[in-house]
Image (cartoon, rainbow over all chains, first blue to last red):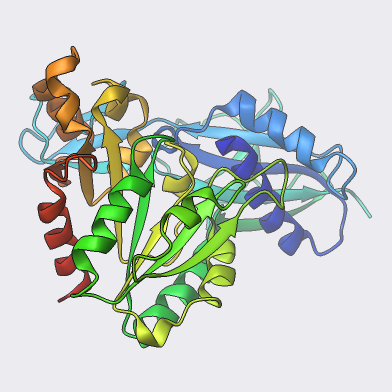
Length: 112
Length: 255
């Protein structure tokens, strides 16, 4: 369900930027904290683009792990769970470095 | 803006900086090597929604209305809590309710006659029924409310623990209703929603003696994903905690 809404939002952004030109692939970058399942998003993309100008275009998904920098001990760690804390000293006084990305990066257009 | 390049294995991507990985491999000579045209977008996936949400927020603030987006899973007790809320605050705040549901006016009907202006938004016009309200749907619902006559707008989102958290609708604050019948582990399973909430109403607390629910463990799980959230234990059935919730709303409304 979530992925379907996200796919529709991506298609909206793609259509605005493609401006009628044929699109072969779309690169998106999505952080782990967004709770998007890549396979479900790829499936949703296929479903919503079928019969549209974007039919046949490939959605490339770059998944970005969630990482934090600890203000207490200085360590940087990657989160396995959605618990925003340092994996070294368990402090919650951390800065989120990555993991909330939610970006349409680029489109590739077919050769004219 | 980063540069695109292609690696020998055919993968390609762009970098904002050089921290990602070592770059002794790959062709870095130009922006594209494929002959095909690439269009850089670098736009938030939800930027169009966020733009409309900002318009909603501007209009609401201009009318002197503060807005709370109320989210929960289906059956957590949002509508029952809202009924209590409207009764409690009817003499203190002028309240509007924007009621989102996939289909039917059942919940909107339950809120009639309590002194609030109610606008219903059914989301089933789209692809099999949207699972959340987005900013454009809310914009349509706002047009049916007398904004100039309101202090506080409560947006009852579609019951769903995932999608509504991603879609800003123009709210000033986000409230979540969670029922203790849902289990202690929900914050860890649905972190996007729990992270988004400014306040979590822990509802159906009157059922605590009858359940195996581990309240301290739930509160620890919640603090793990969102240490900043205000927590209010309540029962929309008995009225326990509803006063604290209404106080929170009055503070949110600035009254």
